[in-house]
Length: 245
Image (cartoon, rainbow, N blue to C red; front, side):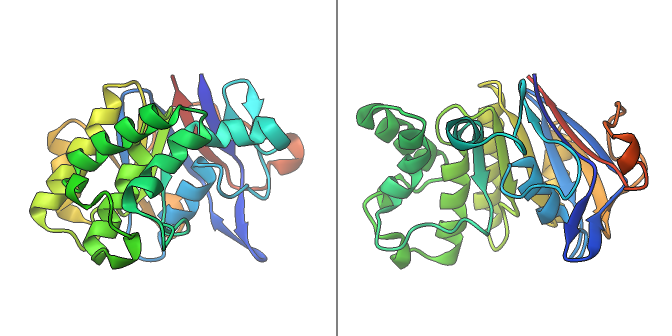
């Protein structure tokens, strides 16, 4: 079981995400949908362990990410494939090397990591660019590369922010195909998107759309479940992200 649980997320003195409850299971694709100010990106960073809640807990298996340190924390984060705007591709490095990095970090041999990277690059139609310096890629190609990097190998959870922003309809279809390919490998996939065309495609393929507005998940957007809070945190609005493998 993989669970991410938080009770409050703050930016400075303000609580920016509140009263949100969400469950994502292995083999399920869930999209957080919201316009600017919805705070979907904030929730994604917490779900991916890239940001910690100001109160509450984030569980990955039997480990609480917020309290984990050193090697344990690194291993937990490596089990998550992440494609967010706060983790740009490395300039001066080839596209292939950028996409290979998560697998190398997971301890995979170079040959296996390279094969996995070529596989996901082919899914987003970037295999022919594998040797290119990412600094020379077009913005749309870099967006596709972030998706590929998040999906490489066998992550337990894939988290991607606005994966189709600035993409053509054809490339958006490739993104969706790539994300769905991870479901077949047992991953849970959590995506944030304001692209209504992409969201409609997700719904047609039995994915689930969860709407957010001003830091809140709208009624009916989350699956029911126990929200973990402590008595001294009861005044804080709960957030629950639960991934069950």
